[in-house]
Image 1 (cartoon, one colour):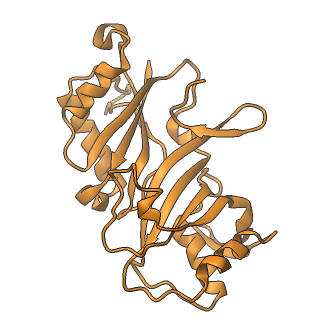
Image 2: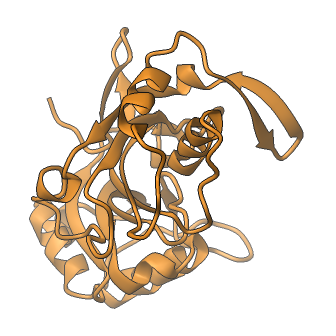
Length: 253
C-alpha cells in the first residue's frame, strides 16, 4: 500500500538540503513506528519517493513524499488521520504534516507525477527595483514568445520560456492577501508587492521562479542581486484526464 504525505517546510529548516530532508524522514518514520516497506537486496532501504526537491532557502507548504507501507488495515485501521497524527507527533519545528492519502493501485509515484508548481515570490527590503516594474511584468507575461537561453547539465539550449509559465501576475500587498492564511511563509523584511506564478515543474522543463524573474528584469537592464528573493511554494500539481487538468498531488474527486 502506497501512502502520499503532504508537508510544509519552513523556519530554520528551510536551510537544510534535500538529502538531509530525506534522512530526516527516514529517522522520523522509524520513531513513529510505521510499518514501512524496505527494498530487497544486499543493502535494503526504505521505499520512499519525494515529488520535487525544494531549493535551499525556500519555504513551502506544497511538499510531497510517497512511502510504501506493509499493512494499511492493522496499522491504521484504514484511517489516514491516525497516520497523520503519528507522523506529526515526531516532527520537529520547521516541518509539519498537512495531509495524508492512501493511493489507489497503479498511481504513479510523486516524482513521476509532478507537472507544475505554484509559487509566491517576495523581494527583500532595501532593493531598488525599476520604476513601473509591475506593469512591465504583465507585458512580459503577455508576450507570445519569450526566447531565452537555459543552462542544463548538457550545456545551453534555447527555449521559449512562455510555454513553461502557466500563470504569472503581480500580487499587490502580497503578505496581506496571498499569505494571510499561511503560517509557513517567511514574511519578514520584504517589499509590499510580490509575484505569484504557476510554472512547469516536470522533469523535462523544470523552471525555477528565480530564473523567470532574472529573465524578466534582464530585459529592462536590471540585474537582481544575490539573495534578492524569498520564494514560497504554495502547491505542487499533477495532470489528470484527457485534457491534462492540473490538480494538487493529493486530490480526490
